[in-house]
Image (cartoon, rainbow, N blue to C red; front, side, top):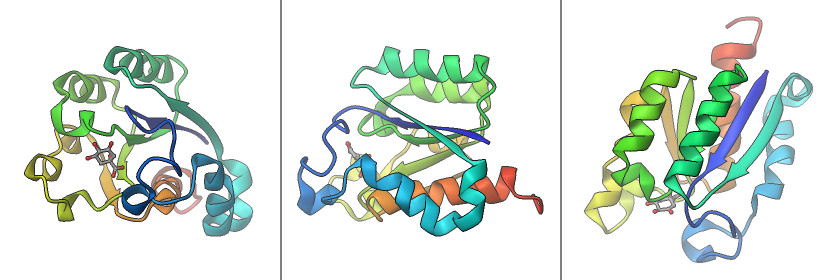
Length: 151
Ligand code: DQA
């Protein structure tokens, strides 16, 4: 099962960007967390990581994933979550099962715009507030929905 993990703007230096808000782990921690959650089944899952600060580049990458028949998406669109109709439009038509993720608990953040997501209605679910573990939990959710024999 091929899963593309996409990080949007300002998510290229995880572990270094405001660790008090976004945690001190980088994306390099993800494979081990996935291994811990999926155990034996982790070998059935191939993770590809992508990050861009540009809205158009993110859309280009999602279209590429559609062409390549990627099975699932884990998407942290960063601030574009709250503002990008273009990203939402892309998810609406490529229809790859997508889990929206956030490192921080966006619903508990002070700024009200962070409580809004334009992409949420095009995602199968959302996980927020667990740092890099949010991504691992999203991979587990995709595995259970799409990859496991019981799916
Ligand atoms: C974020 C939350 C967004 O509000 C913010 O703009 C980010 C990161 C998160 O992972 O907590 O860049 O998506």
